[in-house]
Length: 474
Ligand code: NAD
Image (cartoon, rainbow, N blue to C red):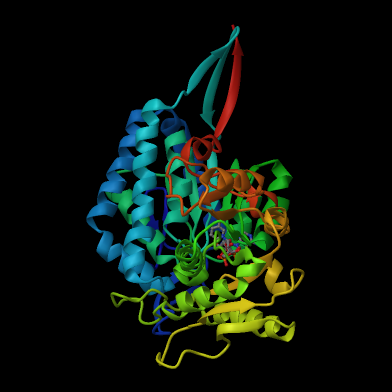
Protein backbone atom coordinates (compact mmCIF):
# COMPACT_ATOMS: atom_id res chain seq x y z
CA UNK A 1 0.00 0.00 0.00
CA UNK A 2 0.94 3.67 -0.26
CA UNK A 3 2.84 4.92 2.80
CA UNK A 4 3.57 8.43 1.62
CA UNK A 5 0.86 10.25 3.59
CA UNK A 6 -0.70 10.64 7.01
CA UNK A 7 -4.23 9.69 8.01
CA UNK A 8 -5.90 12.75 9.53
CA UNK A 9 -9.56 13.67 9.81
CA UNK A 10 -10.67 10.63 7.82
CA UNK A 11 -8.42 11.39 4.83
CA UNK A 12 -4.92 10.57 3.61
CA UNK A 13 -3.07 13.89 3.51
CA UNK A 14 0.53 14.91 2.85
CA UNK A 15 2.81 15.65 5.78
CA UNK A 16 4.04 19.19 6.22
CA UNK A 17 7.43 17.66 7.11
CA UNK A 18 9.98 17.13 4.37
CA UNK A 19 11.91 14.19 5.82
CA UNK A 20 11.30 10.57 4.77
CA UNK A 21 12.10 7.64 7.07
CA UNK A 22 13.42 4.36 5.61
CA UNK A 23 11.84 1.12 6.75
CA UNK A 24 14.37 -1.72 6.52
CA UNK A 25 13.63 -5.44 6.31
CA UNK A 26 15.91 -6.87 9.03
CA UNK A 27 16.40 -10.17 7.19
CA UNK A 28 17.20 -8.86 3.68
CA UNK A 29 18.72 -5.60 5.02
CA UNK A 30 16.93 -3.81 2.14
CA UNK A 31 14.83 -0.66 2.38
CA UNK A 32 11.25 -1.83 1.75
CA UNK A 33 9.32 1.41 2.22
CA UNK A 34 9.52 5.01 3.33
CA UNK A 35 7.11 6.86 5.59
CA UNK A 36 6.84 10.59 6.24
CA UNK A 37 8.76 12.05 9.13
CA UNK A 38 5.81 14.04 10.43
CA UNK A 39 6.06 17.48 12.03
CA UNK A 40 4.61 19.29 15.04
CA UNK A 41 2.20 20.99 12.60
CA UNK A 42 0.97 17.54 11.52
CA UNK A 43 0.28 16.74 15.18
CA UNK A 44 -1.65 20.03 15.49
CA UNK A 45 -3.83 19.02 12.53
CA UNK A 46 -4.43 15.51 13.91
CA UNK A 47 -5.30 16.85 17.37
CA UNK A 48 -7.72 19.37 15.85
CA UNK A 49 -9.42 16.55 13.91
CA UNK A 50 -9.59 14.34 17.03
CA UNK A 51 -11.04 17.20 19.11
CA UNK A 52 -13.65 17.93 16.49
CA UNK A 53 -14.71 14.29 16.37
CA UNK A 54 -14.84 13.86 20.15
CA UNK A 55 -18.31 15.25 21.04
CA UNK A 56 -20.12 13.08 18.55
CA UNK A 57 -18.02 9.93 19.08
CA UNK A 58 -18.28 10.12 22.86
CA UNK A 59 -22.09 10.33 22.50
CA UNK A 60 -22.28 7.41 20.04
CA UNK A 61 -24.01 4.47 21.77
CA UNK A 62 -21.44 2.06 23.17
CA UNK A 63 -22.97 -0.81 21.20
CA UNK A 64 -22.18 1.05 17.97
CA UNK A 65 -18.64 1.74 19.10
CA UNK A 66 -18.25 -1.97 19.93
CA UNK A 67 -19.58 -2.92 16.49
CA UNK A 68 -16.69 -1.04 14.87
CA UNK A 69 -14.24 -3.11 16.94
CA UNK A 70 -15.93 -6.33 15.80
CA UNK A 71 -15.78 -5.18 12.17
CA UNK A 72 -12.06 -4.41 12.47
CA UNK A 73 -11.43 -7.83 14.06
CA UNK A 74 -13.32 -9.48 11.23
CA UNK A 75 -11.09 -7.90 8.57
CA UNK A 76 -7.90 -8.66 10.50
CA UNK A 77 -9.07 -12.28 10.64
CA UNK A 78 -9.74 -12.43 6.89
CA UNK A 79 -6.35 -10.91 6.03
CA UNK A 80 -4.20 -12.53 8.71
CA UNK A 81 -1.73 -14.10 6.28
CA UNK A 82 -1.06 -10.93 4.30
CA UNK A 83 -0.89 -8.73 7.41
CA UNK A 84 1.50 -11.15 9.15
CA UNK A 85 3.80 -10.85 6.12
CA UNK A 86 3.86 -7.07 6.57
CA UNK A 87 4.95 -7.45 10.21
CA UNK A 88 7.54 -10.11 9.37
CA UNK A 89 8.98 -7.95 6.60
CA UNK A 90 9.27 -4.84 8.76
CA UNK A 91 10.52 -6.35 12.03
CA UNK A 92 11.64 -9.94 11.46
CA UNK A 93 9.25 -11.99 13.59
CA UNK A 94 8.93 -15.53 12.14
CA UNK A 95 5.81 -15.67 9.98
CA UNK A 96 4.11 -18.48 11.85
CA UNK A 97 4.43 -16.60 15.15
CA UNK A 98 3.45 -13.37 13.42
CA UNK A 99 0.14 -14.93 12.33
CA UNK A 100 -0.57 -16.33 15.78
CA UNK A 101 0.65 -13.51 17.97
CA UNK A 102 1.28 -10.35 15.96
CA UNK A 103 -2.13 -10.52 14.25
CA UNK A 104 -3.96 -13.11 16.39
CA UNK A 105 -3.54 -11.19 19.64
CA UNK A 106 -5.00 -7.93 18.27
CA UNK A 107 -7.98 -9.89 16.94
CA UNK A 108 -8.51 -11.36 20.42
CA UNK A 109 -8.15 -7.93 22.04
CA UNK A 110 -10.71 -6.33 19.71
CA UNK A 111 -13.21 -9.16 20.18
CA UNK A 112 -12.73 -9.12 23.95
CA UNK A 113 -13.41 -5.38 24.15
CA UNK A 114 -16.41 -5.63 21.82
CA UNK A 115 -17.88 -8.20 24.22
CA UNK A 116 -16.87 -6.33 27.36
CA UNK A 117 -19.00 -3.41 26.18
CA UNK A 118 -22.08 -5.48 27.00
CA UNK A 119 -21.18 -6.23 30.61
CA UNK A 120 -19.22 -3.19 31.72
CA UNK A 121 -20.97 -1.03 34.35
CA UNK A 122 -20.75 2.46 32.83
CA UNK A 123 -22.84 3.83 35.70
CA UNK A 124 -23.38 2.75 39.29
CA UNK A 125 -24.84 4.13 42.50
CA UNK A 126 -23.12 4.65 45.83
CA UNK A 127 -25.43 6.00 48.54
CA UNK A 128 -26.96 9.18 47.12
CA UNK A 129 -24.38 9.42 44.33
CA UNK A 130 -24.59 8.39 40.71
CA UNK A 131 -21.12 7.39 39.54
CA UNK A 132 -20.67 7.98 35.82
CA UNK A 133 -17.68 6.79 33.77
CA UNK A 134 -16.91 9.10 30.85
CA UNK A 135 -14.19 9.18 28.17
CA UNK A 136 -11.11 11.15 29.18
CA UNK A 137 -10.99 12.87 25.79
CA UNK A 138 -8.32 12.91 23.09
CA UNK A 139 -5.69 10.19 23.55
CA UNK A 140 -2.16 10.34 22.17
CA UNK A 141 -0.87 6.80 21.61
CA UNK A 142 2.86 6.19 21.11
CA UNK A 143 3.98 2.64 20.36
CA UNK A 144 7.16 0.57 19.79
CA UNK A 145 8.21 -1.90 17.08
CA UNK A 146 8.34 -5.30 18.74
CA UNK A 147 4.61 -6.14 18.64
CA UNK A 148 3.72 -3.26 16.36
CA UNK A 149 0.03 -4.06 15.85
CA UNK A 150 -0.71 -5.53 19.27
CA UNK A 151 0.63 -2.45 21.02
CA UNK A 152 -1.48 -0.19 18.80
CA UNK A 153 -4.65 -2.22 19.32
CA UNK A 154 -4.12 -2.58 23.09
CA UNK A 155 -4.50 1.22 23.20
CA UNK A 156 -6.85 2.04 20.33
CA UNK A 157 -9.48 -0.66 21.04
CA UNK A 158 -10.21 0.35 24.67
CA UNK A 159 -9.81 4.06 23.88
CA UNK A 160 -12.41 3.90 21.09
CA UNK A 161 -14.73 1.76 23.21
CA UNK A 162 -14.43 4.29 26.02
CA UNK A 163 -15.55 7.04 23.62
CA UNK A 164 -12.14 8.68 23.23
CA UNK A 165 -10.63 9.82 19.94
CA UNK A 166 -7.03 8.98 19.12
CA UNK A 167 -3.84 10.36 17.58
CA UNK A 168 -1.42 7.47 17.00
CA UNK A 169 2.30 7.71 16.43
CA UNK A 170 3.61 4.22 15.63
CA UNK A 171 7.27 3.29 15.88
CA UNK A 172 9.27 4.75 13.01
CA UNK A 173 11.20 1.44 12.93
CA UNK A 174 8.13 -0.69 12.07
CA UNK A 175 5.29 1.63 11.04
CA UNK A 176 3.86 -0.31 8.07
CA UNK A 177 1.32 -2.44 9.93
CA UNK A 178 -0.09 0.72 11.51
CA UNK A 179 -0.72 2.02 7.99
CA UNK A 180 -2.62 -1.18 7.20
CA UNK A 181 -4.58 -0.71 10.42
CA UNK A 182 -5.49 2.89 9.54
CA UNK A 183 -6.70 1.73 6.13
CA UNK A 184 -8.90 -0.91 7.79
CA UNK A 185 -10.38 1.66 10.17
CA UNK A 186 -11.16 3.79 7.15
CA UNK A 187 -12.68 0.80 5.36
CA UNK A 188 -15.07 -0.01 8.24
CA UNK A 189 -16.29 3.57 8.08
CA UNK A 190 -15.05 4.89 11.41
CA UNK A 191 -16.19 8.53 11.52
CA UNK A 192 -13.62 11.10 10.36
CA UNK A 193 -11.22 12.26 13.07
CA UNK A 194 -11.94 9.45 15.54
CA UNK A 195 -8.60 7.84 14.64
CA UNK A 196 -5.60 9.68 13.22
CA UNK A 197 -2.15 8.42 12.26
CA UNK A 198 0.94 10.63 12.24
CA UNK A 199 4.17 8.80 11.44
CA UNK A 200 7.53 10.20 12.45
CA UNK A 201 10.25 10.16 15.04
CA UNK A 202 9.85 10.17 18.80
CA UNK A 203 11.79 13.38 19.16
CA UNK A 204 9.52 15.34 16.80
CA UNK A 205 6.08 13.72 16.60
CA UNK A 206 6.22 11.84 19.93
CA UNK A 207 7.28 14.91 21.89
CA UNK A 208 4.71 17.10 20.13
CA UNK A 209 2.01 14.65 21.22
CA UNK A 210 3.31 14.45 24.80
CA UNK A 211 3.42 18.24 25.12
CA UNK A 212 0.20 19.06 23.23
CA UNK A 213 -2.39 20.97 25.28
CA UNK A 214 -5.18 19.51 23.14
CA UNK A 215 -4.37 15.97 24.21
CA UNK A 216 -5.89 14.75 27.48
CA UNK A 217 -3.92 11.54 27.94
CA UNK A 218 -0.82 9.87 26.58
CA UNK A 219 -0.67 6.10 26.47
CA UNK A 220 2.90 5.01 25.82
CA UNK A 221 4.67 1.69 25.33
CA UNK A 222 8.42 1.66 24.95
CA UNK A 223 11.64 2.37 26.77
CA UNK A 224 12.04 3.91 30.22
CA UNK A 225 14.11 6.68 28.67
CA UNK A 226 11.27 7.83 26.41
CA UNK A 227 8.69 7.18 29.15
CA UNK A 228 10.46 9.62 31.49
CA UNK A 229 10.70 12.29 28.80
CA UNK A 230 7.02 11.91 27.90
CA UNK A 231 6.04 12.15 31.58
CA UNK A 232 8.02 15.37 31.95
CA UNK A 233 6.43 16.96 28.89
CA UNK A 234 2.93 15.76 29.82
CA UNK A 235 3.27 17.28 33.29
CA UNK A 236 2.96 20.77 31.76
CA UNK A 237 -0.81 20.41 31.40
CA UNK A 238 -1.31 17.57 33.92
CA UNK A 239 -2.14 14.98 31.28
CA UNK A 240 -2.83 11.48 32.42
CA UNK A 241 0.09 9.27 31.39
CA UNK A 242 -0.03 5.48 31.11
CA UNK A 243 3.36 3.83 30.69
CA UNK A 244 4.18 0.28 29.62
CA UNK A 245 7.96 0.06 29.86
CA UNK A 246 10.66 -2.58 29.99
CA UNK A 247 11.41 -5.55 32.18
CA UNK A 248 14.06 -7.88 33.59
CA UNK A 249 11.76 -10.72 34.41
CA UNK A 250 12.69 -13.84 36.33
CA UNK A 251 11.52 -17.41 35.89
CA UNK A 252 11.79 -19.30 39.18
CA UNK A 253 12.10 -23.07 38.79
CA UNK A 254 11.36 -24.74 42.12
CA UNK A 255 13.25 -27.70 43.56
CA UNK A 256 10.33 -30.12 43.82
CA UNK A 257 10.15 -30.89 40.07
CA UNK A 258 11.32 -34.32 38.90
CA UNK A 259 14.07 -34.46 36.28
CA UNK A 260 11.75 -34.50 33.31
CA UNK A 261 9.53 -31.67 34.58
CA UNK A 262 12.62 -29.67 35.57
CA UNK A 263 14.07 -29.92 32.03
CA UNK A 264 10.66 -28.98 30.63
CA UNK A 265 10.46 -25.89 32.86
CA UNK A 266 13.92 -24.80 31.72
CA UNK A 267 13.01 -25.38 28.07
CA UNK A 268 9.77 -23.46 28.50
CA UNK A 269 11.62 -20.52 30.10
CA UNK A 270 14.20 -20.42 27.29
CA UNK A 271 11.47 -20.61 24.64
CA UNK A 272 9.56 -17.80 26.33
CA UNK A 273 12.70 -15.65 26.54
CA UNK A 274 13.67 -16.22 22.90
CA UNK A 275 10.22 -15.64 21.39
CA UNK A 276 10.36 -12.69 18.98
CA UNK A 277 14.18 -13.00 19.20
CA UNK A 278 13.99 -11.93 22.84
CA UNK A 279 12.48 -8.61 21.83
CA UNK A 280 9.63 -8.80 24.28
CA UNK A 281 9.20 -6.69 27.37
CA UNK A 282 8.07 -9.74 29.38
CA UNK A 283 11.08 -11.91 28.41
CA UNK A 284 12.16 -14.29 31.18
CA UNK A 285 15.74 -13.12 30.79
CA UNK A 286 16.76 -14.43 34.21
CA UNK A 287 16.39 -18.14 34.93
CA UNK A 288 16.60 -18.97 38.64
CA UNK A 289 17.30 -22.59 39.60
CA UNK A 290 18.24 -24.43 42.82
CA UNK A 291 22.04 -24.27 43.28
CA UNK A 292 22.32 -28.08 43.51
CA UNK A 293 20.68 -28.38 40.07
CA UNK A 294 22.66 -25.58 38.37
CA UNK A 295 24.60 -27.81 35.94
CA UNK A 296 21.46 -29.75 35.06
CA UNK A 297 19.75 -26.44 34.25
CA UNK A 298 22.65 -25.19 32.11
CA UNK A 299 22.65 -28.39 30.07
CA UNK A 300 18.88 -28.18 29.48
CA UNK A 301 19.04 -24.45 28.67
CA UNK A 302 21.91 -24.93 26.20
CA UNK A 303 20.04 -27.76 24.46
CA UNK A 304 16.93 -25.60 24.19
CA UNK A 305 18.91 -22.64 22.83
CA UNK A 306 20.75 -24.79 20.29
CA UNK A 307 17.50 -26.24 19.00
CA UNK A 308 16.04 -22.77 18.38
CA UNK A 309 16.35 -22.75 14.59
CA UNK A 310 17.43 -19.36 13.32
CA UNK A 311 16.92 -18.23 9.75
CA UNK A 312 14.70 -16.60 7.18
CA UNK A 313 11.60 -15.53 9.12
CA UNK A 314 9.36 -16.01 6.07
CA UNK A 315 10.15 -19.75 6.02
CA UNK A 316 8.00 -22.19 7.96
CA UNK A 317 9.93 -23.83 10.76
CA UNK A 318 12.10 -20.81 11.60
CA UNK A 319 11.75 -20.03 15.29
CA UNK A 320 14.33 -17.27 15.62
CA UNK A 321 14.39 -14.39 13.18
CA UNK A 322 16.83 -11.49 13.01
CA UNK A 323 16.74 -8.62 15.46
CA UNK A 324 14.89 -5.55 14.29
CA UNK A 325 17.90 -3.47 13.19
CA UNK A 326 21.66 -3.42 12.93
CA UNK A 327 21.72 -1.05 15.91
CA UNK A 328 19.71 -3.47 18.04
CA UNK A 329 21.95 -6.37 16.98
CA UNK A 330 25.09 -4.43 17.90
CA UNK A 331 23.56 -3.37 21.21
CA UNK A 332 22.76 -6.97 22.17
CA UNK A 333 26.18 -8.25 21.10
CA UNK A 334 27.69 -5.46 23.21
CA UNK A 335 25.80 -6.74 26.25
CA UNK A 336 27.16 -10.25 25.68
CA UNK A 337 30.74 -9.02 25.22
CA UNK A 338 30.64 -6.90 28.39
CA UNK A 339 29.09 -9.78 30.35
CA UNK A 340 32.06 -11.93 29.35
CA UNK A 341 34.44 -9.14 30.38
CA UNK A 342 32.69 -9.15 33.76
CA UNK A 343 33.30 -12.87 34.25
CA UNK A 344 30.16 -14.44 32.80
CA UNK A 345 30.58 -17.76 31.00
CA UNK A 346 29.00 -18.30 27.57
CA UNK A 347 27.44 -21.77 27.73
CA UNK A 348 26.20 -21.52 24.17
CA UNK A 349 25.84 -18.71 21.62
CA UNK A 350 28.00 -15.60 21.96
CA UNK A 351 28.93 -12.51 19.99
CA UNK A 352 29.81 -14.18 16.67
CA UNK A 353 27.41 -14.01 13.75
CA UNK A 354 25.63 -17.27 12.90
CA UNK A 355 27.41 -18.93 9.98
CA UNK A 356 24.48 -20.01 7.83
CA UNK A 357 22.81 -16.69 7.08
CA UNK A 358 24.34 -14.35 4.45
CA UNK A 359 22.19 -11.40 5.50
CA UNK A 360 20.08 -10.43 8.50
CA UNK A 361 20.69 -8.82 11.88
CA UNK A 362 21.09 -12.09 13.77
CA UNK A 363 22.28 -12.73 17.29
CA UNK A 364 22.97 -16.34 18.26
CA UNK A 365 20.70 -17.71 21.00
CA UNK A 366 22.88 -17.27 24.05
CA UNK A 367 22.92 -18.83 27.51
CA UNK A 368 25.11 -17.18 30.15
CA UNK A 369 26.27 -18.74 33.44
CA UNK A 370 28.22 -17.41 36.44
CA UNK A 371 26.64 -13.97 36.06
CA UNK A 372 27.28 -11.60 38.98
CA UNK A 373 23.98 -10.44 40.49
CA UNK A 374 25.02 -6.78 40.36
CA UNK A 375 26.46 -6.86 36.83
CA UNK A 376 25.06 -4.98 33.85
CA UNK A 377 23.64 -8.09 32.18
CA UNK A 378 21.85 -9.09 35.40
CA UNK A 379 20.18 -5.72 35.85
CA UNK A 380 19.53 -4.24 32.38
CA UNK A 381 17.00 -5.17 29.77
CA UNK A 382 18.84 -6.74 26.82
CA UNK A 383 15.94 -7.15 24.34
CA UNK A 384 17.62 -10.01 22.50
CA UNK A 385 17.91 -13.82 22.62
CA UNK A 386 20.08 -13.87 25.73
CA UNK A 387 19.26 -15.61 29.01
CA UNK A 388 21.28 -15.56 32.23
CA UNK A 389 21.04 -18.52 34.63
CA UNK A 390 21.36 -17.88 38.36
CA UNK A 391 21.62 -20.40 41.24
CA UNK A 392 19.59 -19.85 44.42
CA UNK A 393 19.93 -21.43 47.87
CA UNK A 394 16.31 -21.73 48.97
CA UNK A 395 12.91 -20.25 48.16
CA UNK A 396 13.57 -17.06 50.14
CA UNK A 397 16.78 -16.57 48.19
CA UNK A 398 14.95 -17.15 44.90
CA UNK A 399 12.34 -14.54 45.79
CA UNK A 400 15.08 -12.12 46.86
CA UNK A 401 16.94 -12.48 43.54
CA UNK A 402 13.75 -12.31 41.47
CA UNK A 403 12.68 -9.08 43.18
CA UNK A 404 16.16 -7.55 43.15
CA UNK A 405 15.52 -5.45 40.04
CA UNK A 406 14.36 -1.95 39.17
CA UNK A 407 11.68 -3.53 36.98
CA UNK A 408 8.53 -5.51 37.78
CA UNK A 409 6.72 -6.46 34.61
CA UNK A 410 6.47 -10.25 34.56
CA UNK A 411 7.67 -13.46 36.18
CA UNK A 412 7.27 -17.20 35.92
CA UNK A 413 7.12 -19.88 38.57
CA UNK A 414 7.41 -23.60 37.84
CA UNK A 415 6.76 -26.20 40.55
CA UNK A 416 5.22 -29.63 41.17
CA UNK A 417 3.14 -28.37 44.09
CA UNK A 418 0.84 -25.77 42.55
CA UNK A 419 -0.01 -24.20 45.91
CA UNK A 420 3.66 -23.77 46.76
CA UNK A 421 4.25 -22.23 43.32
CA UNK A 422 1.30 -19.88 43.85
CA UNK A 423 2.73 -18.88 47.23
CA UNK A 424 5.96 -17.87 45.46
CA UNK A 425 3.95 -16.03 42.77
CA UNK A 426 2.27 -13.97 45.51
CA UNK A 427 5.68 -12.85 46.79
CA UNK A 428 6.95 -11.59 43.41
CA UNK A 429 6.75 -7.86 42.73
CA UNK A 430 5.58 -8.10 39.13
CA UNK A 431 2.43 -7.27 37.19
CA UNK A 432 1.86 -10.70 35.67
CA UNK A 433 3.12 -14.00 36.95
CA UNK A 434 2.64 -17.23 35.00
CA UNK A 435 2.52 -20.40 37.08
CA UNK A 436 3.55 -23.52 35.16
CA UNK A 437 3.28 -21.73 31.85
CA UNK A 438 -0.18 -20.30 32.60
CA UNK A 439 -2.15 -19.39 29.50
CA UNK A 440 -2.52 -15.83 28.16
CA UNK A 441 -5.80 -14.25 29.25
CA UNK A 442 -7.27 -11.34 27.28
CA UNK A 443 -9.31 -10.23 30.28
CA UNK A 444 -6.32 -10.07 32.63
CA UNK A 445 -4.72 -6.66 33.26
CA UNK A 446 -1.23 -6.26 31.80
CA UNK A 447 1.36 -3.83 33.16
CA UNK A 448 4.27 -3.31 35.45
CA UNK A 449 5.36 -2.59 39.00
CA UNK A 450 8.25 -0.22 39.74
CA UNK A 451 10.11 1.08 36.64
CA UNK A 452 8.12 -1.20 34.34
CA UNK A 453 5.47 1.47 34.21
CA UNK A 454 2.23 2.98 35.43
CA UNK A 455 -1.25 1.77 34.65
CA UNK A 456 -2.59 -1.35 32.99
CA UNK A 457 -3.61 -2.44 29.52
CA UNK A 458 -6.22 -5.03 28.47
CA UNK A 459 -9.32 -6.18 30.29
CA UNK A 460 -11.45 -3.90 32.44
CA UNK A 461 -8.40 -2.18 33.92
CA UNK A 462 -7.18 -1.33 30.41
CA UNK A 463 -10.55 0.21 29.55
CA UNK A 464 -10.71 2.24 32.75
CA UNK A 465 -7.35 3.88 31.94
CA UNK A 466 -9.28 5.85 29.29
CA UNK A 467 -12.19 6.86 31.54
CA UNK A 468 -12.85 9.75 33.88
CA UNK A 469 -15.07 9.29 36.92
CA UNK A 470 -17.88 11.68 37.78
CA UNK A 471 -19.88 11.56 41.01
CA UNK A 472 -23.34 13.15 40.81
CA UNK A 473 -24.97 13.70 44.20
CA UNK A 474 -28.75 13.38 44.08
P1 NAD B 1 11.48 3.56 22.36
O1 NAD B 1 11.13 4.10 23.70
O2 NAD B 1 12.74 3.98 21.73
O3 NAD B 1 10.33 3.92 21.32
C1 NAD B 1 8.98 3.66 21.57
C2 NAD B 1 8.14 4.73 20.92
O4 NAD B 1 8.41 5.97 21.57
C3 NAD B 1 8.46 4.95 19.45
O5 NAD B 1 7.28 5.27 18.76
C4 NAD B 1 9.40 6.15 19.49
O6 NAD B 1 9.41 6.89 18.31
C5 NAD B 1 8.81 6.95 20.63
N1 NAD B 1 9.75 7.85 21.29
C6 NAD B 1 11.09 7.73 21.41
N2 NAD B 1 11.60 8.80 22.06
C7 NAD B 1 10.55 9.61 22.35
C8 NAD B 1 10.44 10.88 22.99
N3 NAD B 1 11.51 11.53 23.45
N4 NAD B 1 9.21 11.42 23.13
C9 NAD B 1 8.12 10.78 22.66
N5 NAD B 1 8.17 9.58 22.02
C10 NAD B 1 9.38 9.00 21.87
O7 NAD B 1 11.37 1.97 22.49
P2 NAD B 1 11.56 0.88 21.34
O8 NAD B 1 13.00 0.73 21.09
O9 NAD B 1 10.66 1.16 20.19
O10 NAD B 1 10.95 -0.40 22.06
C11 NAD B 1 11.68 -1.16 22.95
C12 NAD B 1 11.31 -0.83 24.38
O11 NAD B 1 9.90 -0.93 24.58
C13 NAD B 1 11.91 -1.79 25.36
O12 NAD B 1 12.45 -1.09 26.44
C14 NAD B 1 10.73 -2.63 25.80
O13 NAD B 1 10.86 -3.22 27.05
C15 NAD B 1 9.63 -1.69 25.76
N6 NAD B 1 8.35 -2.40 25.63
C16 NAD B 1 7.49 -2.44 26.68
C17 NAD B 1 6.31 -3.12 26.58
C18 NAD B 1 5.32 -3.20 27.69
O14 NAD B 1 4.14 -3.41 27.44
N7 NAD B 1 5.70 -3.03 28.93
C19 NAD B 1 5.98 -3.77 25.39
C20 NAD B 1 6.90 -3.72 24.36
C21 NAD B 1 8.08 -3.00 24.49
